[in-house]
Length: 46
Image (cartoon, rainbow, N blue to C red):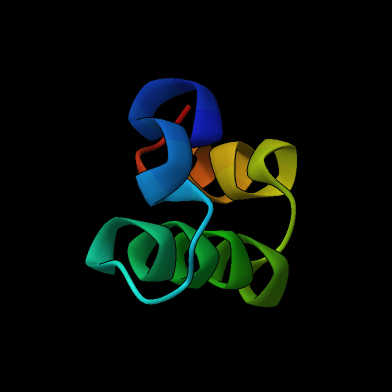
């Protein structure tokens, strides 16, 4: 996020930083991305 948005992606008072932190937390709560891929694939019948 910092590489893409510079300082705005680092400082928490900007919405882009808050969105990044929220998206990271959702990954942790939902499981790793590899596990999520498995769950989605199974629900699609693969």
